[in-house]
Amino acid sequence: MSESVKPLRDPQPLLEKALRDWGGHSDLWIFGYASLIWRPEFDYAERRPARVHGWHRALKMWSRINRGTPECPGLVFGMLSGGSCQGMVFRIPKSQGRDTLGRLWQREMVTAVYDPKFLACHTTHGPVRALAFTLSRKSPSHTGMLSEDEYRRIFATATGIYGTTLDYVQATLDELRRHNIRDRQLERLLHAARHKG
Image 1: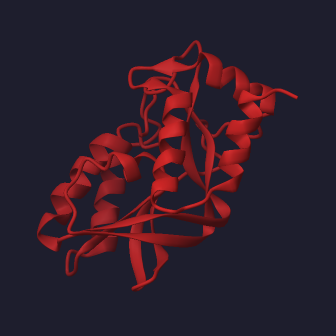
Image 2: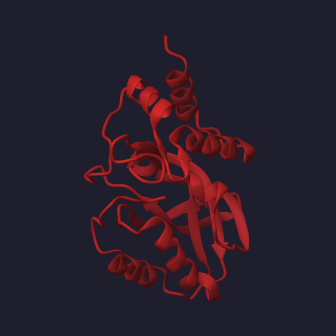
């Protein structure tokens, strides 16, 4: 979930672009890679496991409200370029697409931190083109490289209005496992950050 104190950009033109890119002539697909999987907050007609190539899930986005504070920032996931990412795609009937996008913007794009993009997603029932909330490495919300000690400190201390960074990360990992999606990098990160040495 995107947040900051002040919008980086006006989110409305980005919503209008997403609506144009979708077109409204067919059902809308949304790609979830973190909290959208375990708390989508929208109705959907179908959900499938999916993989995106060229992007990966990364715990490298500062959270100063939802999972941290300005004084003690937490972390949330973003999708960074490179690698691949397993997640879930959600199919929204085209009659509900415009309303669903509007509600998604209120949740994810209040501060316009993300760069929404339609990406090719591979599923067992064929490819779909789905909207994903990607993160630029040039964004001021991108953390850059963090050490294991920094992750350990953030997991131990960062709490925001929706709870701790650690709970958010664990909930994401638990839901991925529930859908038989392995994220070994995330597993290693959580283990290393909890067990020093």
